[in-house]
Each structure stands twice: as structure tokens, then as C-alpha cells.
View 1 (cartoon, rainbow, N blue to C red):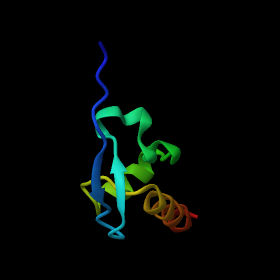
View 2 (cartoon, helix red, strand yellow):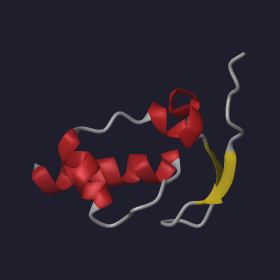
View 3 (cartoon, rainbow, N blue to C red):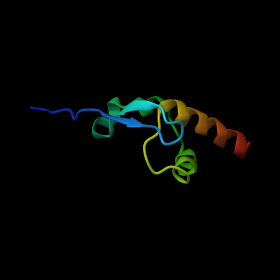
Length: 69
């Protein structure tokens, strides 16, 4: 029997919004909608150690693109 871990309700450390983190089922997590390059992941992790909401990941991805262009 496959048991899917329950999502964790958490707050985004960047914006404070509540979201469901599915770190135990990462393929079902809201963050999977945002495809970050390795450089973008490093950019995000240089400021944040915890999971972020998809909206903030999108904003940080855009910020990184603007910085390198």
C-alpha cells in the first residue's frame, strides 16, 4: 500500500502567505509548476533555506533573469 504523506500547511518566508508544502510528495507540490535552472536555485537558496510559495519562486526567477541579462 502506497501512503502519500499529508501536505504541510506552512507560511512562505518571503511573503508570509500560507500554502501547502508537499515536500513528502514533491511531484505533487505547487513549486513543481516553476522550473528553475541550477543558477536560479542557487540564487533563491542564497537568501532562503525553507520552501517558498510558487508565486515567490516565480518572482525570484524573474529577478534572477533580469540580473543576468
